Length: 221
Image 1 (cartoon, rainbow, N blue to C red):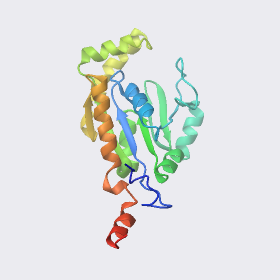
Image 2 (spheres, rainbow, N blue to C red):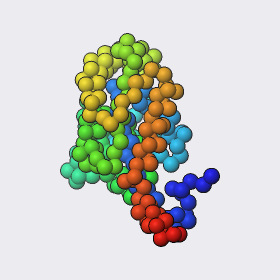
Image 3 (cartoon, one colour):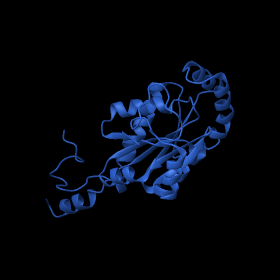
């Protein structure tokens, strides 16, 4: 069965749908990065927003793929030039979303995934509310969150303790999100996020081809 959104007979020469900004936020260790990777692997038409950051690369990360790694001077220049849709300080380092690639993707009907914290989500909401769908990922328990942080073996005990102390504040922002998913089981959580993405893509306001399509139906075409 053909997909009406992609059928050129329906909207020849038109952008069928305005792009969507899908935000995933969570306390560190709750699973948003894993969920992001699974979504990107499953949906080839979904692309990751590449943030700029002043923090050092972690093992296995690639510049321009995971993040664009820049120094503080250049980060401040981007802020001054209003080249960032959002920016925040997290654990002594700075992160931000370049505006240009996001604007181009939305206009071209492409969806963008954001793995950002609540500060960034608030700023995106102020700038791009109509284009945004936000999801907060909760852990099933504090004990499980701590265990996940320790088992990934990326951080020292001191850093794990800092992340745990910050988790309560991060979790307090859950009511600011459109959706909340409790990540008790990764497959179940992925299914819920997948359903949210599908529903958001089908929102009437995002399906820009519908006005002309319905008009043609009314004209008997």
